[in-house]
Structure formats: structure tokens, C-alpha cells
Length: 326
Image (tube, rainbow, N blue to C red; front, side, top):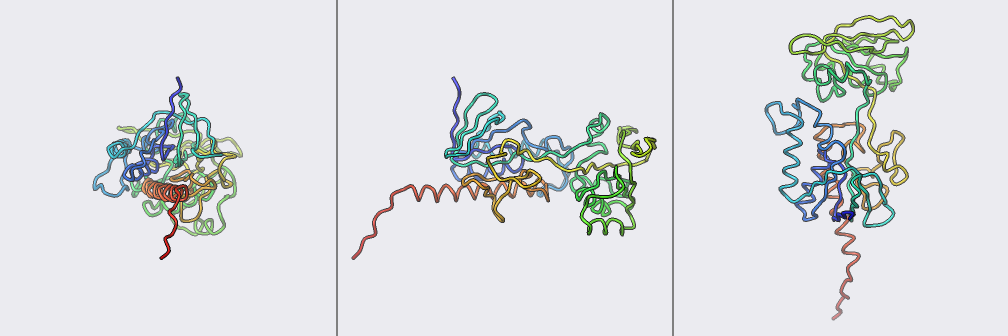
């Protein structure tokens, strides 16, 4: 028999945004259900050292942080379901969703916190050295490369912004780009070219990340000249892959308004989407900051927005007593 799960609030995604929404919703008595998705805990579960989440003097581990958030959410009354949503129907309330398990999920409100994934080069050596010199987030990990020689890979706004950011930590930053011109906005390019601590290597792509040392870490990259095919080795201790992110929104195409990059559109200053009663938070709607703490903040906003939506809907649905005249 197919299981059916109903809640005042259904939350898709269990990263910092989804779990924060669950904590606030549970404390408001909404008995939220969190469908954890294919990567419970979100991107922080594959992040080792976390040094920029408020409240911790020492470096903490990403998986541990997400474990604590989940425990807190469950402690105040949220329910976790290990499932992945494959079908949605947002045409009426309660919203209906079907999981890979065959279970049916019904929600008076829906919070979408499915996140986004960094795009990688998909090299075996890249996978091997992730977290050991290879990263996709300079803002997250740049602090660990103070005074070291680093590279940033890419040619768009993200790459240029990350190269500029890394000059706060390193005096030797090299931008690697496979073409002979950048796609980044003109003003960003001007800042990049004017910076004395950044150089650009044109027409180069990473053929391989090279590890070494004990414990093993990144020591170099093999660069392929895209015009001649020649390979050269370039020494570096940190590599930041900055070729963009892909929001997990494919499920909502045709159901919610998305922007040109596939992120869910929300009303400015809120988490409200194009469908009343559906809210979006975290990296699925934020293409600028993409930090755990900002994701958690928008998760709080989504829960509060949903609580207000339900209160107003309940008031409108309840017959009001006639005014008494003297």
C-alpha cells in the first residue's frame, strides 16, 4: 500500500536552508516534513573544514554541522523522510508530490530548498584532490591558502570575482582560461587586469591536477594549450574551479518561474515564488552569496513567510462573526 504523508509544511532539501526552515516551522507548531533528497545535508556533507559559520571558535566539519542541525530540527518536532521527489503538482492546494519510493506527499505549503551544485571539470584527479587543494568556493576555503600560490579556473563573473577575492589571502593568483577573452562583465575585467597580484594565462585548460607530499595535497596542475595541444606543468598549492553552478530546479520547470540561469525567482525581500504557498530558500534561489549562513537565513525567512501565508489563509477560510451594532 502506498504511504501518504501530509503536513502543514513540506520541505524539499535538507541542507542549511531546509533544516533551518524546519526548525522555525516546527517551533511554530507546523509539524514540517523534510524530504531529504539524494544528498541529505546538502553540499556541507562533502565539505571538510568549515571556519566561517558563526558560533564556533575552532574549525568544524561540514558533516558534523549538518548532523547537529538535523538533530535540532528533529528535537523540536520536524520529521525526516529519506526520499527523493520525482513528480510535483502545484496546481492546487494541498500541493502533491510523489517520491521515488512511491510515497505521496501532501503539503499545505511547500518550501523548496533543493540547492545548487558547483560545476566541476570532471577529471579523475580533480575528484581525488577535492578538499586537498582543489575547491569550488574561494569564499569558503580561501582562508586556508593564506600566502600560497593559487589558481582560479574559468572566465565568467564567478571566476573573476573569486580571483579578486583570493588577493585578500594570496599575493600570487593566476586565472586560467581556455579562451583568449573573458565572458565576465567589463568592470570586473578592468579590476582584474589592474590588480598587480593577478595574472591571466590565456588558451589554457587543466588536463590534470597533480598531487604530492605527505599527507597528499595539490602541488601542481598540468595545463594544455588549447591552440597547440602542448602540455606544461604549473606549480600551485590551491586550485579553485569557478565555472558556475547548476541549481536543482529541473523538477520545477513549467511549475515555477525561473530566471535565465535556472534559479527560482522570488519576490524581492521575501522567499515567495510565482505560486502562492510555495517558497524558495538557499542556493536554489541565491546565485550571488551561496554561503551556509545566508542559506540558513533564507530558510528562516521561508518558514516565517509560510507561517504568515497559512495564518492569512486560515483567517480567510474561517467565517467571521457579524459586527454588533449598538
